[in-house]
Length: 266
Image (cartoon, rainbow, N blue to C red; front, side, top):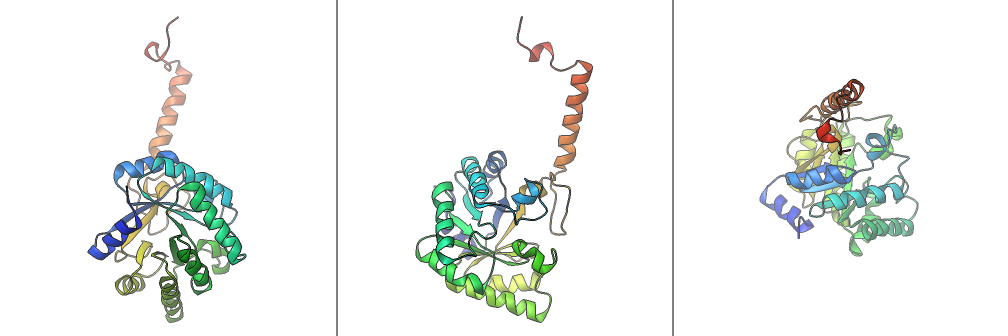
């Protein structure tokens, strides 16, 4: 049956860490499944990593559905979460329910992810009531990048910490089974993890979260434009790929490719 919500909650209860990778295509999702990763997140970060945009804001619902379908085919047994893109759930409750329903029906997702706290709690509660599992997202929220003036650590001041704690409780009480904590001080994430029923997944939130998530292209070193403090590159993928392309170019130009063994007979 693969990884289910019950699997993830059991891991939290037993103190076993959860692994999540954000990815956008069939091949990388397939590699995640082969490696035994628990969850794949089809993130709206595809706007920057896949499309070359400056922010996540232009990403559309149709684009999220397109990528999520590819990821589902690559990782049929992993728990798949899909980001709801900017303005796909903020306009009205009715429109948000319709759009979240589309994602679940058309992609095979097992949960949707929404950014925000108290202001989206009524939507989280309604989605949960109708059977759509919800993942929250607190701390630095990429869809609010212009409000923050750019990426920043959230929760350093007393006021910011209290706001995150309050928003977390609102999401948990509304039924969110998991909350992603992005760019949050380790102590704040630790307090939330130890006091909550909901699963915490960190990205720049320290080691005490129930799980960790990184973008596939970051952890394999394919995305070189930006390297946040919290990213660990496990291999220099871009360097390896560039070298392969350079060798291909050189072999073609020298007449070494294709060889007789790589060609069909007369």
